[in-house]
Length: 591
Image (cartoon, rainbow, N blue to C red; front, top):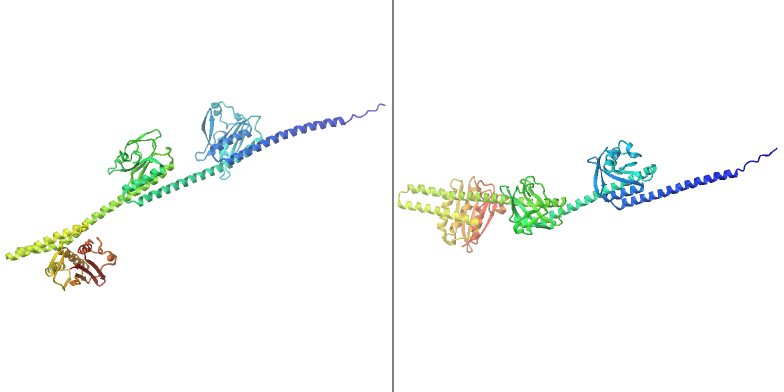
């Protein structure tokens, strides 16, 4: 019987082991490849992180991020879209031939638009089998899109979609889950970067706005200082214009104002090169370089290639803003010619508006001041005329009386006496008008001569009794000196008349007016007292100032001012004491 020996198992086990070893070696090789691939992706992600951390300028980020993404995913091309939330569009800069152009896609249009609208990623192995894919782009460019990875870029702070990244056509095979995870990580990093870049841009814009505001405030301070340090409008405008030229480092500048018919803009101030020529400029409001400005008050700058003529100056660049006041609207324009740099920004116009606003305020203030002065002058004229009429009332009454008795006079001597009275009153009126004009002009002229006080005071008594007749005011005279003195009797008569009239007006219900005269230490002392209610407290400190009056119907406030003026012409003094029991004026004159 033949014995069957078993086959050795060693050779089979060895073959299995060898196969397992080869399998492990293949797996190890795959792991090494995958590890190498992962390391390269990690390195690429590090590079993306470095790019994101080293630059916050969106244009530069766009270019670098697209290039890195394409490299990491071994793709043919990538596109990064930004979201325009106001227009609900995606926008990107894409290369067509040798030129860059802006590509815009509405939300929901194409694959990228679908991702932006739905905030969901898409992995499309075959683009032409997906109805959302827009083939027109491929037809236009001749490009063939195969596989697509399109991922939303989410804003980590505000939520929602801030962009979309689109990767096309993997070079080796098709996109897989690893590519999806990698693109998801890249999109997340880009979202953070875009948020940071947006915040950075906001900070830059705020800083620029603050800097512009600081510059405008500085300009406002300088123009305000110029205005406050000057009183004449021409000097104010010249200073404002000089400040503007320095701020914009401009060659020349002009401030125009509308003429009275508001048909022409006339140069009111000019500075810089050819300032004399510029100061003679005048343009109709229909002029092409101004017609947009004056009716609507629109800021206008000429086109770069357009050359304007300003006298002998050829202008390629300018800044032009309206000068506006609250009630009159546009009253002129401020034009800065050839500012240094040429390229003008909105901030320059804003700064110039500040200057124009100050110019408008200065012009408006000057016009209001002139209007007030004119009104005050008219009021002064009216008051002076009122005073003249008031002062002439008594002499005219006396003239009327003398005329009546002259008609009834029976003898030649009576007629001559009454005629002398008429002549005296006419002469008195003439002197009154002359004194008033001298006071208004600030002139000082007196005719000092010898005066016999008996005769002088007799004439004063006759005048005062006529003045006070029928008013209930009783006249009292106390003459302790009746000799001769030297003064201008016409002007002193004017002083006494004014004081008597003030006393009469202060006592409308009647009272007492006392006049005394004495000589003390070589000086004549006149005292005028009444028992009225006294001078009101509101005007006590300024009774001798022109137009200082209170509570008197028809009062002009010139009477006591002229009293002081005449007394000082005589090198004398005048003082007043007042209380609720009455008022006393004391006048001293060199005898």
